[in-house]
Image 1 (tube, rainbow, N blue to C red):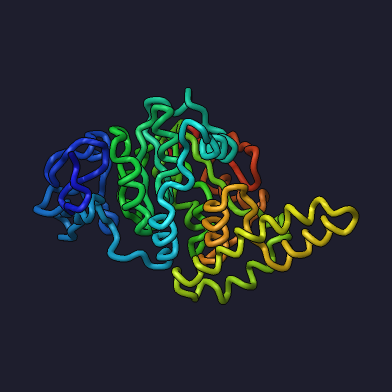
Image 2 (cartoon, helix red, strand yellow):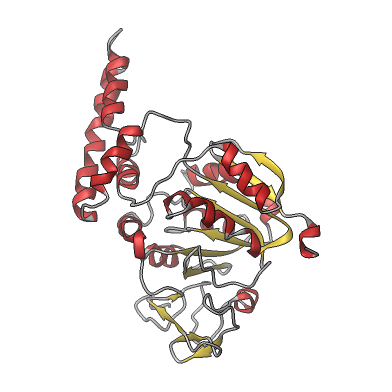
Length: 336
């Protein structure tokens, strides 16, 4: 039985492992120092870079390549407060549907492939990809990695690390597939965050991202409110997010009133945007997610296509849900 409280236990692939005991071989092989790009050696409490002397410890079962959450503390709070809200089960397949609609990936493509999940949160989409047969490496800057490690500790093909998208701890051209769903727009510079990813994609591999849409105007007041709300303590803001629970029923009631009901509902939603998911816990989670981030940019297909093209990615595809784009790294990229 695995002891998640022991910082020398790597809950990365479902087997009991000491710090020296093994990460999956193909994952261990691609790990690099994010500072000097050197290979890493085993150390007493994790891994060490012999070139620059930097240590990367296991803490609460997760290998840490960063010292702090920086601007992502609200995400660490929300995913440890709602660690299983969005996980699929035998009755619910929302995450699998969202994964298809936002990446265009299929089980046949991912089976047996090494896949990087950028901004894995509590492991929602890593769970789907691993269920499809992929070998998944999930990274997140926040303490959400602890929830992901707990949720996926029995998956022998999942590895979770705390790391920064701007300084990833991997060798170039390591992954067959890379995806980032709803994460890059929460970084200080979404474009630069995206452009940091293609170097880690193998020639012939595919990358997909889903970002907030600049075409949708109805939530604009939430952008104004967030200038204040992101400064609140996560606990206070989370308590305020419970307004989404009764507002859902208010909107439901208004929509059955002839003539004035639906317009009134739309006005209320415009003035006070809250999530309208049928599940109350999901409403609170998503409403908190809207109002808590320090950074939250919106994007168009035109600019995202330019990012892909500037990274020499081709076969660009618009996927089902805006703004979702998928691209391919040509085999010739290896020669370049």
